[in-house]
Amino acid sequence: MEKLRVWDVVELDPSYKLVGTTWVFKLKQNHLNEVVEHKARLCAQGFTQVQGVDFEKTYSPTGRLNSLRTLIAFAATTGLQFYQIDVKSAFLNAPLSETVFLSIPQGLHQDRRKMCLRLNKAIYGLKQAPLAWYQRLKNWLVTKGFTSCNLDPCVFHRKGEHPIWLYIHVDDIAIFGKAVDDFKNEIAGEFEIKDIGVADLMLGIKIGQDKSHLSLDQQHFTDSLLHLYGMDNCKPVSTPLIPNQHLSAATEKEEAEFRALGINYRSAVGSINYLSTATRPDLSFAVSSLSQFLEKPGIEHWRAFLHVLRYLRGTDDLGLVYSRNHQTGIRAYSDADWGNCRETRRSVTGYLTTFNNCLVLWKTCKQPTVSLSTSEAEYKSLCDLTSKLLWLRQWCEESGLLLGSSPIPVHEDNQGCISTANGDSGINGKRMKHVDIQLHFVKEAIKTSKVRLVYTPTDNMLADFLTKSTSRPTLYRALKRLGVVCLGVRGCVENTGADC
Image (cartoon, rainbow, N blue to C red; front, side, top):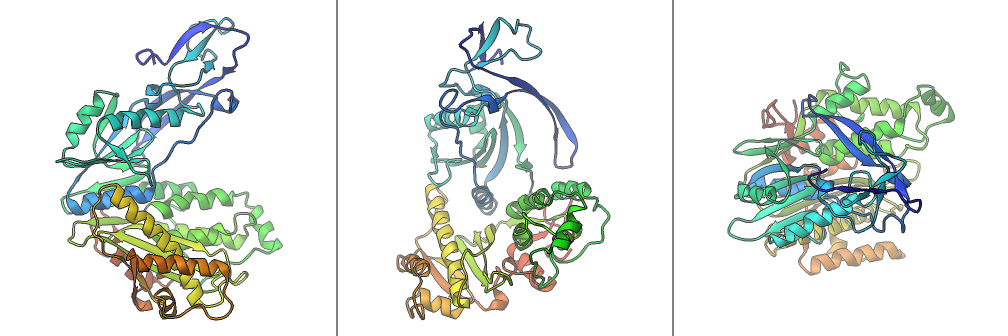
C-alpha cells in the first residue's frame, strides 16, 4: 500500500465522514481443495457509504460464462495457447475520482482520535472500487491496441500478426493467443502480476489441457458439496431426477416435515446452480425444477435434491471436453415440453448451442405464459434461442472469431413450428400479440439469413434432456454427442463416453 500510495495520513476534521475498516483473512485453495496461500486484506466497510455523497456509479461489468467457454472452444479447436495471470492487489492500482476518508485501521500506529486516511486509490470494500479498477485496466489496454467487445465489455481483442484475446474477471485474466509472453511482459511493466502459467483453475472451474483436448470440470467443488451435505458415501444413481418425475407444490404436512429438518433449501439449490450453469448441462432441468419451490419447499423437494446429490456422487468427474476438429461455426438445437407443469400447464424451454462443435451455451426454463399447442410452445423456445444466437453471432464478429456469412443451422423437431417460421402457415385461431411478435422476430432472422431451420427427428434432438427428466440411455447418448464425458485425474479425456 505504501508502494502504490494508496492513502495519505491527514489530520481528522469534524466535517469528515469516515468509512470504517476491517481485516479479512482467507485461505486460498487449489483444485484439490489444498491450502496454497494465507491471505489478509484490509477492506473498507462500504455499507456505511452513502450514494451521491461518497460515490456515484458502482456498476462494473462481469464477464459471461458463455463468452469464456466460447473463447476456450476457439482456443481448443485452433491450437491457441491458453494462459492465466492474476493482478496482485488489483484495486489498489485504481485512482479514485471521489474524496473518501477512512478511519485508522488496527495495526497502523496513528492516533485514531486525531488522524485519518485520505484515499488516493480504491481499496476492497468500497462501493466504487470494482468500477474504478475496470476503468483503470480498460484505459491501459486501449493504449496497447486492444478493443473491448460491446456485447461483453470483459472480452478484449487485439489484432495483428499474432492476435490476442483476453477474458477478464476482476483481477483474473485469461489470455488466448500464440504470442502470450509478449503480452505478459507488457502488463508486468504496468502492474504487479502473478504468472500462473498454463490455465488450470479459473472461476472455480478446473481446466485440463493437452495437445488434442481441453477440458472443463468442477470435481473438486462437487466433492466439497457432497461432503457438506454428508453424502460422501451415498449410493449413486444414474439420472439427476427420477425419469418422468413431476414435482408439485408441497402440502402443509410436507412443508412442516421439511421445516423440522432445519435446512436452508434455497442455499442447497443455489449450491448446485453454479454447477449447472458452468460445466454441467445435465443438471439444468433438475435445478430449474427444484428452483420453482424456493419459497415453500417440502420434504419431497428435499428428497429430489438428495437424488441430485446421489447422481453427482456417481458422475463427479463429468465435464466438458473441447477437442480439436475441422468443424467450424455455430449450430443450435431447440426443444420444448408442452404443458410440462401439471399445476400451471406452462411449458418448458430447452436449447443449446455449439461453437466449432463444442458445447458453449445451454438453457432450461419454464415459459412465462401458457401455450395452446405443441407448435406454440416450440415456437416460444425457438424465439428465445434465436435472440441468443443473434447475440452470439454478433459477439463472435466483434471479438474477431471470424465466421462465414451463412445462416446458423437450428435443429427443430416440430414440423408445425418450422412451417410457421418459414412462412408456410400462420398461427391458427385468434392471434395473441406476444406470439405474433415472436413470430415476426424469428421470420425476420430467417429472411435475413441469420438462421435457418433444420428438421431433426425427436430421437436425434440433443436438447431433449433440457426439457424433461429423461431416461438414462437418452441422457447419456446426448451427453456423449455433446462432449460431456468422464475425465481422468489429469483433467484430460480418459473415457470417450459419458457412461462411466
